[in-house]
Length: 198
Image (cartoon, rainbow, N blue to C red; front, top):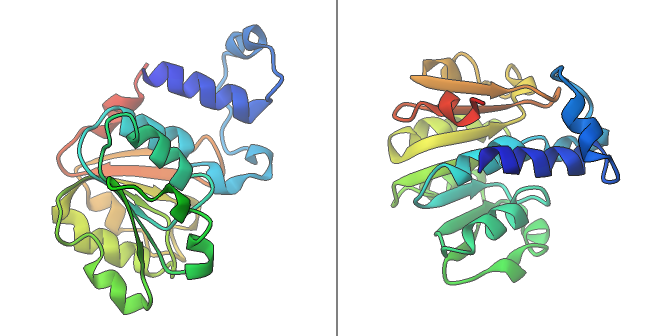
């Protein structure tokens, strides 16, 4: 399953008109490239891989064009519970058409309101890509005992976002650094590196 997801992702992102045989001939890993200036979507491959290899509720911290519709589509077949939380109400309106009984949206009016987002459920996956950015590490800490796996976008901004040294305290970690705008997958209970093995 993960090889199919990677192939579909790479074909679309490298070049939508690319010859599959030419892509499959490449034997070197391309790392830290600019992803066609779509740095907002560099988390898609690791996020899809984690979703495909897990079950249970999903929490999306921060809505986006490259995550909310994708998570909705991946969760829809089984009606897997998904909650999307967002601080920017005018931005969230672009996604609320996806609202379903199994896909809930929550507007987070003030930074302090993040304190209660997701605190009443044990999450299989938490995708972290929200504002204000300094809330990200706070929410990872807050939800650490209430989540199996975190997918953390914008790893390249680890310093300004205060990701380190905290992310290094997780038992398992995989850094998806194919692109400069990298993504970390961390867990205390699941060996996430196994999701990315060939």
